[in-house]
Length: 255
Ligand code: 13P
Image (tube, rainbow, N blue to C red; front, side, top):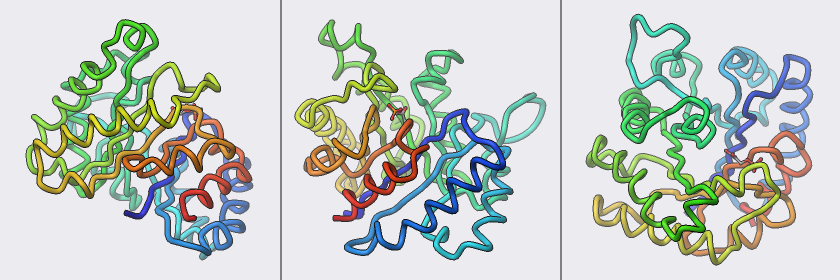
């Protein structure tokens, strides 16, 4: 299947920095995508959506980059101060929304049920949720990795029924995020296979659900991770802010 490389800029960027990054990305993408197709997205802070749209209108190569959000409300509209609804994201032609990133679960107390509601809101307007699951270091050391990721995914399957085949699933071991420590290709593949099997029990279309890996993926390790049979792409934090590195990862995925 076509791989997906999605950058997660997290809370980084400015009007000037974004313009520089996106124009460099637009400049390098035609070469990076020359051998094979690859879906590319950038999940940027919501205040810059209009800037992305304006730049995309003047840089044809940015048509190859889908716009993504880093979060979405679990509610559809109303008195929820500070929240951004799925319909608002859709107004800016947003194609993806990350939900359940470990930083949201950890710093904002997001529960499995809330993450499932967020995925539901995104799907309802035709935005693909990138549902993040992953264990902490303590959970891995306690031998509960499988149990944790299955519990996190089960909540999303339960709330979304047959629409589950429309999600992108991201396995992001918390201990590998921003630490420079990557899961080995074998460790990542093992968890991806567990997740694929869980999806297969819920939908006959499990084989077409993209299961992407995130956690210190970079230009040096992308190719070997992406070569695993159940790793269908990457969710890239730090390296997505360095255009040359991000383009190398796209090239590895488009090989
Ligand atoms: P890093 O690539 O910086 O480890 O971040 C991964 C991540 O959290 C992507 O969502």
